[in-house]
Length: 235
View 1 (cartoon, rainbow, N blue to C red):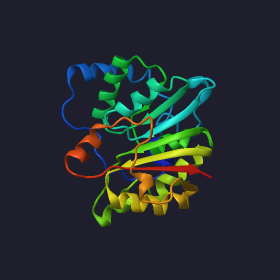
View 2 (view 1 turned 90 degrees about the vertical axis):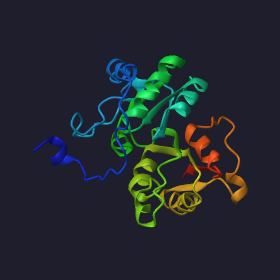
View 3 (view 1 turned 30 degrees about the horizontal axis):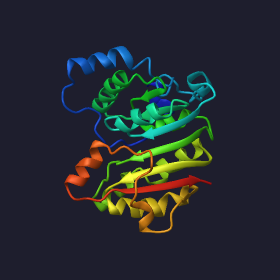
View 4 (view 1 turned 180 degrees about the vertical axis):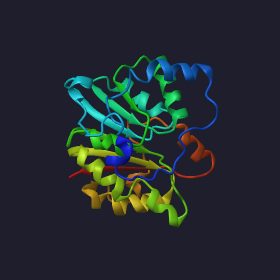
């Protein structure tokens, strides 16, 4: 029996981990860069005791931000380039997205990023309590069928460990083009210890000042869906 099966909690994972065949250049990025950009021992096999990450050794005195499910990584690189005084960890289980991000990191030359190529819940396990100043959840899998809404990120299974990692006053940004996802976020995120920094629909229609439109957002716009931008604060 492996250490993971002995000590790890049972966590269903419903998304994809790999898509089309990677290009040779992407395979090279994974081989040459991924280990170097790891935040440290995250996975249960290498850290069964769930020893917290040493963020000081990663980022020094800089704030730590987290992006949950970074897709192709364009927003993550944009934020890293615009905020060199911040250290950012991205979590993404889809290895094709990880390979895309590694190529963008090489092109941009940013040095303040770390990558966990797996489930964000495993990362939350080893982030020290109240250590993260900002978190992003951008165009997450909408799981549109009602019977699948429990798979969405905006459920207690994900929100409670995220809240544990965030500092009081930290911001949590959510972008989605799915109106029902907005409904669920406004219902469930406050229950996990957050307040929504808005008063009505007009407060979710304008993007953040430092926003870069992602490929998922561009797809939503082409298909006639409206983006929504929600900002929460950790209490």
